[in-house]
Amino acid sequence: QVQLVESGGGLVQAGGSLRLSCAASGRSFSSISMGWFRQAPGKEREFVAHHRWIGDRTYTADYANSVKARFTISRDNAKKTLYLQMNSLKPEDTAAYYCAASTKTYSPVRADEYDYWGQGIQVTVSS
Image (tube, rainbow, N blue to C red; front, side, top):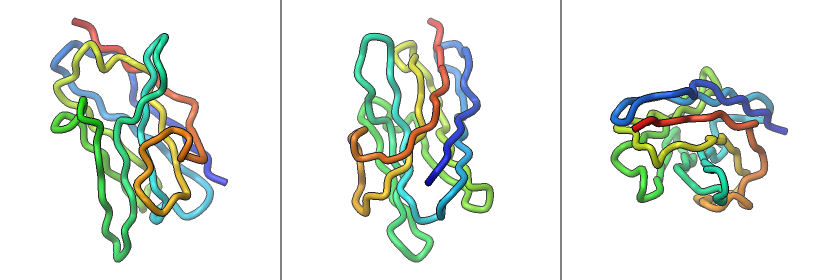
């Protein structure tokens, strides 16, 4: 079992930055694939980024095209925390953001490939 709790959301003006955190508890955090998703009202939950362990303390990351070069996913294994640094925010980034964990050994990008979810946290970007 993995429990996930997000924090760091809020209201920010366009062009600003926010850092989301996701505190994890339960099974080994350092080797589990982690991801961020978001869901805007009336829209499906969409992939934002994932961070996967590929061995020897090495990770790989990937991003949705809409956030590439603006968002950075990272983790601190000592703190069992996943982060999403969001820069140059746009009004279209407004959504509830969810942290998720997957037991898959490949790079999961679909919501149904993730096994554990946080409760979500709101990010609102004003124009």
